[in-house]
Length: 139
Image (cartoon, rainbow, N blue to C red):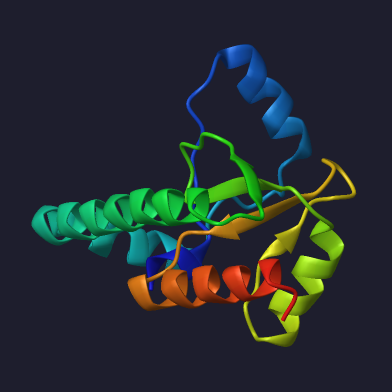
């Protein structure tokens, strides 16, 4: 529920903040997003529980990705997604995943044979891995 508010923050030097302020929209965060973020942060135990669940799913996703024959490399990530280098045509795999209602991002225009996958729920991650394994079989 909280991912939909698209709220992020940056911790950086004053010089970098100056650059960011030159390119950011004039309004930082809407009132609704502020209220939602504050309500999430007020319940620390629920926040910690959700954070731990996301981190567990992220690690499980990484482990499962490494078992896929089509995966060449899973790049390290501190975010809630992975950049995944594939051994074969990422465009074909991306299109096959999309046809099967599995949404990933094709990053091959920037980094050859790479897709970006967001950490989802256990069920979403399992669906993605199963579909990816079907792609490696050419099905």
